[in-house]
Image (spheres, rainbow, N blue to C red):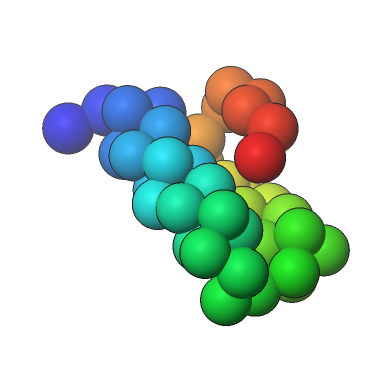
Length: 47
C-alpha cells in the first residue's frame, strides 16, 4: 500500500493520542517526523 496513505492513518492515531492527553504534542511531532523519514512518506500533515 502507498506509504502516504499509511502515514496518514498513523497521523490519525497520533491525533487521538494527543486528544487523550497520553503524550505531549512535542513528543508526537517527533514520532511523526521519525515515521515519515523511515517510511519514505513525502506528504506533510500536521497534528
